[in-house]
Amino acid sequence: MESNNIFDVIILGAGAAGLTAGIYLSRAKTRTLILNEGMVGGQIVLTHEVANYPGVENISGYQLATTMKKQALSFGCEIKQNIKISKLDLSGKIKTVFVGEEKYTAKAVIVATGGRSRELNAEGEDTFKGRGISYCATCDGDFYTGMDIIVVGGGNSALEEAVALTTYAKTVTIVHQFDHFQAFEHAIETAKNNDKIRFILSSKIENFKGEEKLQKVVIKNLEDGTKNEMLIDGVFILIGYQPNSEKFKEHVTINKYGEIPTDLKMTTNLPGVFAAGDIREKQIRQIATAVSDGAIAAINAIEYIQK
Amino acid sequence: MTLMTSLEHVVTAAQHAEIVENNETVMICCGRMGPMCLPVYDAMDELKEEYPNIKFMDMLFDSPEAHVIRNAAECAGFMGLPFTMYYKNGKVVKATSSIQSKEQIKEILDGSLS
Ligand SMILES: Cc1cc2nc3c(=O)[nH]c(=O)nc-3n(C[C@H](O)[C@H](O)[C@H](O)COP(=O)(O)OP(=O)(O)OC[C@H]3O[C@@H](n4cnc5c(N)ncnc54)[C@H](O)[C@@H]3O)c2cc1C
Image 1 (spheres, rainbow over the protein chains, first blue to last red):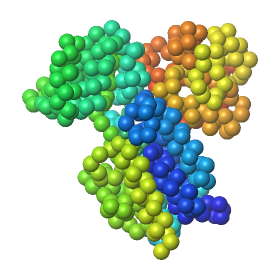
Image 2: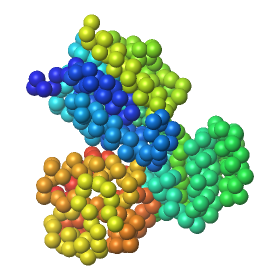
Image 3: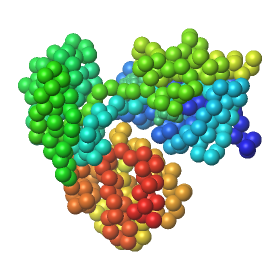
Image 4: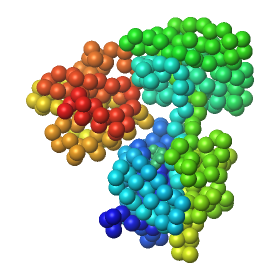
């Protein structure tokens, strides 16, 4: 193995948590590598405008991520993005991570792999992505000007985006699997008071149909089992985020939601393996809390490797 | 009117025609500076070195000149940004709508554009 593949700490994930850990570790002269599946920045890049990150009044998510990346690189942190992790061994004193055939080792690993948009996993979903199915209302909303669309979901983002989409769409039907919403009262009220918004509750989309693009969906009523076809121009799926923890299932303890439990030092059940950010079992998932986790994990990783 | 990326930009419809005509293999991503588009530009930027024979460019979706992509027959039914076009010998060989990972792009480059 090339000696330049030997690190003190490997961070998996370059979102807010991973980049912060990278900044702290590299600034402390700890040889650090961040391996990221996808684009650096993670979910921050999905945020058009961040208005609640202290010290920065208004910034696009992309700009914030770019600045964090620059900061980490300036301290000597190495970052590899758009890679695929092929194999992991986190159990021993020396941890190994494979990217294809390339082997990297470290004394400690920080898992900061965050989350991704949840998919419905309904028939036809893959076929109509970008052809009537979208996961980003701000990106694709204007394609549906004057059209009839569905928003799937019952949380804050689904209700808020449904209201925002009424700027373009003729009608917005919210399809939700429960008979109540998991959103703030004001978000529910705003949606209910909007003339363009209709509700189909206790129901789910079972099937997406169309030819060149999406034309109809099959909606199943979960109370009586009946199914109805509905003609529709577009469907926005906004049903929350799921943790990117599949690759760690055989390595660290994961709870029933797919999150990694840690103690206050961000330590997992495995010595030398830390977790930070949205991947952790925690209450609030925000940039500020991810950054906080990253700093704590980094400082404790330094303490661990110096023992 | 261009995007703020480190890729080369297609600015006019005439330039688009010239590039597609004069280069054997071309990939053009037509989008905005949004979350579904940025990862595609980023992956293209990385792929430039790996595929020196392919011309990687972007184009601003909201530019009036981008009608050459927005209204292309291959984009009929597209409802998600970005619209990404792959050209070989002056012809569209593949077009995709919405975000694509670096792996998905590579599959197209190694398939339709090889
Ligand atoms: C649309 C949207 C808007 C939001 N708006 C705000 C806001 O305004 N303010 C705020 O404070 N918070 C906001 N949040 C929440 C905030 O973005 C997240 O809590 C925070 O960014 C999480 O950071 P993270 O580093 O834990 O994970 P992520 O940002 O998810 O980063 C994880 C990274 O790991 C990579 N990865 C995944 N699997 C692997 C693997 N196996 N190996 C290596 N890398 C991997 C991913 O590609 C990603 O780059 C928003 C979230 C979303 C989705």
